[in-house]
Length: 363
Image 1 (tube, rainbow, N blue to C red):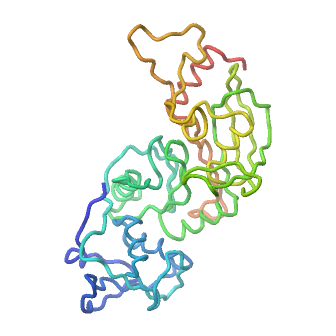
Image 2: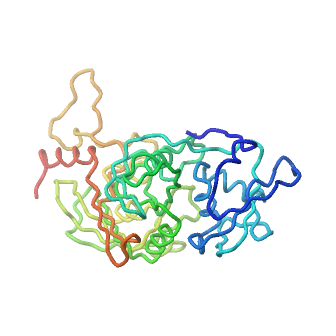
Image 3: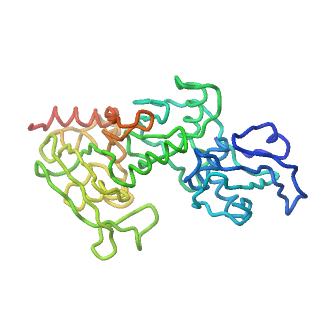
């Protein structure tokens, strides 16, 4: 979905609020001053990278960050930092390359919208959809789909291209409730709630073993000294982490639990459940032999079951059995009011639970 675009001529007709133009100076090393921005009240307090993302919704965040890193963005006349907090009235100059910036093309995808108001939208993210593109990814289907939804499908759509603002993340193969802000003020408001841990988050997980009816796991989690994208439980280098786990239903050697993280470390629920002795029935990163196919099959628990001769048994689920079930936060659109969203379980987890109840449920 990412395509190279030229900004040499076709960028001139786009209007951005709060921006003043001046004639471009002489070209310097293949770049020209395309835009001079003035930070607005709505942008006050936002990071530079978020301001640029909002001003240029068609460009990938990665491309905009590369502009900053290359020194092509000036903040009040000096070299800019991606995380610099903007103040109303600040000046930002953006020098675009003649070619090579990547553009996100709005494209329709299936989105299950659970809640929407003037400030945000909450979707039931499906498995396989990355919130932030992985290294080397050729596209950003979620952002393309959200751009299209905001522009054409939303009840609030006006045809204008609006940048979806990511507030928090779910792992690529974790399903469930994901909130996306519609503006910088809403993003800041929601992000502050996540940072203060006032957001209510609950996960449903299908695990191996028979956990107690309720337990609290307090094991520190670290990313130091491990491969990028992974984490470990470490008393020496870890940061404090706390998860409440409640058993919802038992199925012989398996159970479905509700996990309520009180801190939000990388892969916290997955790591805590495994460390406590109750790993997800499928977790390619943390459970099972390294390199083995991630799968949970009927033959694991149905007595005497064998697939028909010559047929390969299909897995009931082939990704981590984890779902972000509930998400609660204070509304930006209606100050003082709370929003609680519940995301229905995906089909693969519904199937697993159906089969477990049929062949080994015990209440």
